[in-house]
Image (cartoon, rainbow, N blue to C red):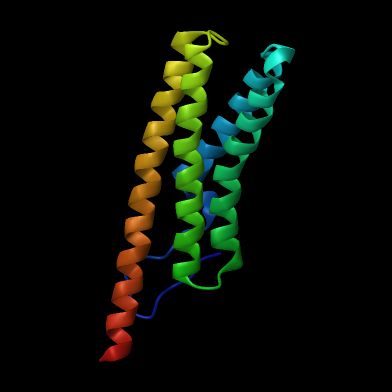
Amino acid sequence: MQVKSKSSHMDRKSFKDLMVYKNSYKLSIIIHKISLKLPFEVRDIADQIRRCSRSIPTNIIEGYARNKSIKDRINFLKTALGSNDEMLVHLKYLIDLDLYNKKIVNKIIESYELNGKRLNKLITFNKKLTRSLENKQTR
């Protein structure tokens, strides 16, 4: 889905083209595999990290697929960012409760931190796009 604003020099990308979507999806697969290796006694944590990790790419998709408005897209991206930050807490639990290899989890934390930065940039881009379109409408 390529959508052009009337005066934008840049096409807005499909979610499939977004690095943040691709990375979020890959991370959700990694988290799913890790969650299946966790002890049965912490299945609640395993279930939660699976849901949380899937929430990030699915909210990115929903924001782009609905194509209702840029403000609507921003809301979904903010929800994805919230889930991304929530994952950081869950990953810290894995380390602090000695549930998984600390080095591996720290690498995943780094990936989620980078993901959060990318989501913030995407939110900022969409906010600027909204302001730009609003300014053009008031002229």
